[in-house]
Structures are given as C-alpha cells and as structure tokens.
Image 1 (cartoon, rainbow, N blue to C red):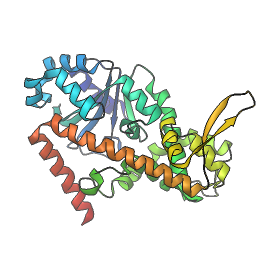
Image 2: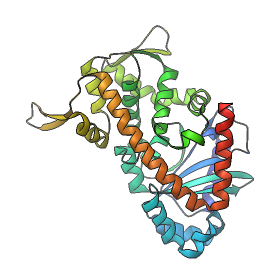
Image 3: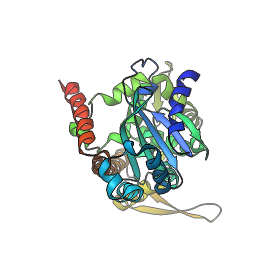
Image 4: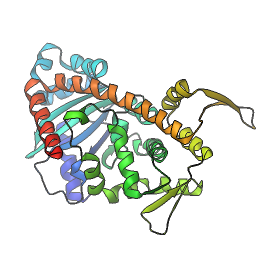
Length: 329
C-alpha cells in the first residue's frame, strides 16, 4: 500500500479516541481498486470498550444509532455487543473525507482470545485474510501467526493431495464463511473467489513462511510449477495438522471422535484427538467450524441490526442482498 493511501486511511484515527490496534481489510486492499465509493472496513481494538464508546459519543455521537445513544449510551452499546453479539460493535455508513467507512470496536482481550482459540471465530476469520495494519501497540501481528498457521492446517485438512495455491487460499478464505447464515441470502456467492483473485499476491506473501514450515516438516511440497502443491495425506500428517488447530476446536472434535492420552519422553501427558482416517478428521472439523460460524454470524447479525438502527440496517442488508442476487443471476 502506498504511503499516501496509508496516510489517507490512517487520518480517520484522528477523529476517534486512541486505539491499541487498527487494521483495514476488504476490497480496499485490492491492488487494482480505484473505486473510492466502496466502503472501507476498519477493526479497532481498545482496552475498555465502554470507556472508549463514552469518549467517542462525545466526539461522534452521529456515528451511532440514535436509540442507543438516548436509551443507554456507552453501557448499552457495550452490553449489546457483548451479550447479543460476539463482542464487536460496528458503526456502518460513517462518512470521512468523502469516503464511506464502517468500523468495528472490540476489546483487546477478546480479540486476542479469538485469534488464539477461535472461540467465536469471527474476527479471527477476518485476520486470516490480507489486511493492512495502521496501529499495533500490542504486537497483534505476531500473535496472529498462530491464527494463520491454524488456518493453513485447517485448509490442508480439507484439500485433496494435489491442489493449487489458489485452491489453498480459497479454502482458507472460505473457513470463516462455512455455516455463515448470510451466505444463504445476503452474500455474493462468488465472494471467496473474488477475494482470492483480487488479493492473490497478498495471500502469497502472507502465507509463504507457513508453507515453508510445512515443507520443512514434509507435510507438503511444491511441484514443478510453483503454484501447484502436493501434500502428504497420510494419517500421521493428518494428526499433525489437527494438532495445529486451536485447543477449543480440538476439544470439540474430541467430544465427537474421542481422545487418547499420550505420554511424552519427558513424562508430560497430553491429549490427542482419535482419528480413524483423514476424511473422518476433515468432516468432524468442518462440522465443528460450521456450527461455530453459524452461531457467531447469527448473533452478530442481530447485534448489528440493533447497533446500526433500523434504517441503516435495512439499507446495508438490501445492498448485500442485491449483490447476492446479482451473483446468482
């Protein structure tokens, strides 16, 4: 991203209270994107959302749904995000320097927890795709390595023995849409392919070190063509991939498939998911992830409707549905 574009995107942060983390994601990052009318998506991480919203209401009360401002203010905004949604409050349709933007505010502890454990698999899914960091006071970029490594493992588990890099990035991208209720009626059915094709080079640079790790472990290798890969589909490799998944996912898989205790040479006891076959492991993981995404997407949809207000929510949904129907025609 050019410095002028970075400065333009970062200038919005002067209009809101200080944040510990900020990234921009979505179509804004497409190298060929020249459409300034498209909405820019921000994620803002803060230590105390209630305090942050309280300050932001003094600066930008017009960013919020009027009913939330008048009925409960910062406390209500935070409670709706935490108890109805998945810990993120979004303000859509905000205008800044002639650009439309949407920003989501999340508690830093919740962001880190989701990145490491996929307990909600909401923002962690967004951070598995290309993004541009504007503020990173707590080194979330480094923490996110765990998330990207797990995403690669999950994608490999779902892919056949031979595949292309484009297949891989599409599978990684699709993880956060498995079970997403919006995909039924309010999302472009070609969304994943558009994201990957539009940001292929960014995906490549993002996952290159993790692919090299897998190559070192003999989990995969590049074939003669650099864009083609071949992975080891053996049971031992499948177990290795499952072991790289977040603990909460492995725990759910263990409930479905069972688990066994492993005694290491140092005498440490660890638990391992019982895997009868690669296909069994892949189906089980997919089932766990679909359920998780379905619950989170449903909760966030309700929270988003309340947070945006009836008019904004209706406009936003109608735009989404128009894109979805156009992609089906």
